[in-house]
Image (cartoon, rainbow, N blue to C red; front, side, top):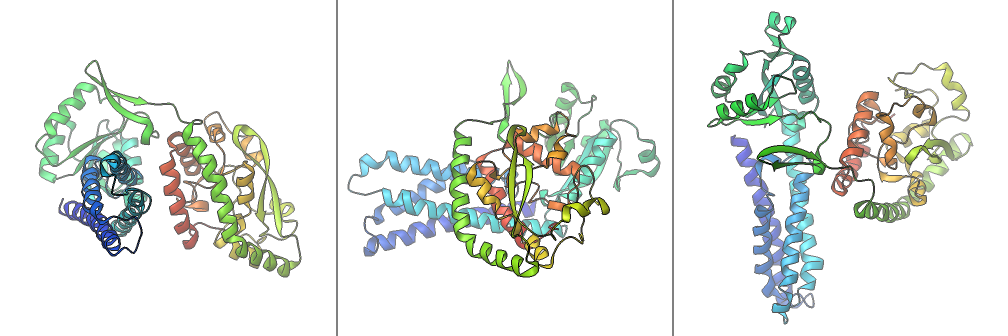
Length: 463
């Protein structure tokens, strides 16, 4: 679509400006001798290397622009590849020191390229919230799964899918009578699906799980869609498993969806542990004035204790003491039985909780009350990013599926934090936590931490 081509062109232009601009500036500084060891002769080489590896690592592939962590991962992969090649060329560039370029210039290029892509993505998501820059979609499958996909695309409009037509595999009396499902018109039979795509100009044909979709039927549908502008998107049975764990490979000429084991140990987890401790220490140093001011405000408000300690459940079902700044009146736990729970599931949430103090409301609004949990991260009982730390009484009702949340350390923030916080239903909160457990990666952690800042500043869902 026209907007796709323009968006891709904007991404390529922003990458080129970041790479060429930084390389040119570094070359000029090296030529002037402003920075010792920064030889200007390497500037064209490094710019060419990066601009070669960006398309080689498919960082400009239009299908993954504007959504998910994969876009950022590919940029990092391209920059790393350029650094490796530059290091390998080091022996042939003995008189030219490559270290300043690898340690200073390349990271600067990477930061600016990622920042530009983030800003472009924010513009894209803002446009989609107003109904622009959307991909017209026709969905085919069982009535229940079709309805669920329609509702999800409306709830998460940043994905860019707008379902404009539906084709039902099985008959739904209500949909047949109304001629629509979830407000989307129902079109003809599956045999006519390809013809409808050609006439309607749909960009995506989304196929939801159903026993009707045999390999022969899907293969013939793919053949019939050849020559159209539509991309065929097939939802696998493992709908909640995605990311780096899922790979498609051929086995004896047959396409197989391979799902690797979730990574609970290994080098990536070790890096996460180290990053947690270092990040928590630096965050405590930076936020210590805020903590001190909050402690004084709590003490002056009602003279009660500054901290609130609560038993929570961590990895493998073990209990630990979680620290928070006190935001409620002393003895608030004893008042809980007198209040009506507004949340579904085992969670207890009230939008206008009368137990919250005036100072506590401000602390909750900006999540300042959660800063003492950095001590839990330093002690190893929590992580910076992970599932929400549950209460002990919550876990007593967990089934085997929900208990998978306890396979990793709980986090100060997570997918639940950047996706709505207290506005989420219990079901959505569990689904996001399980998705994190299944699809964890260092890149996903970095994206969540970045989005947490925006969620905290906006205060959406905090009460």
